[in-house]
Image (cartoon, rainbow, N blue to C red):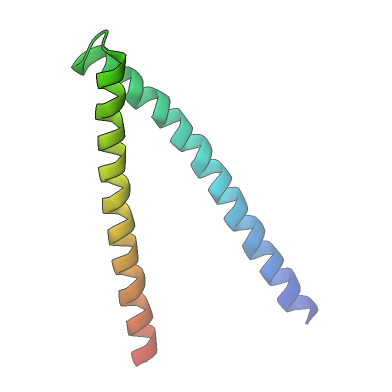
Length: 82
């Protein structure tokens, strides 16, 4: 019981740390992508830049979520067969 609790605790802490670092990286890229769009694609047009950014990020999020779900489902099905 103690080993299971410790193992679960470590797994949860690892997930939280990974999520935290992921958030920091996402925020860094967020600022970088917004600045690049504003500077190179639509200079001086804040609203258009934000719209382009929102569309790009949304599209990327949908693609990544779709493929992660697909990989997860394939892994679950493979484990169930074995």
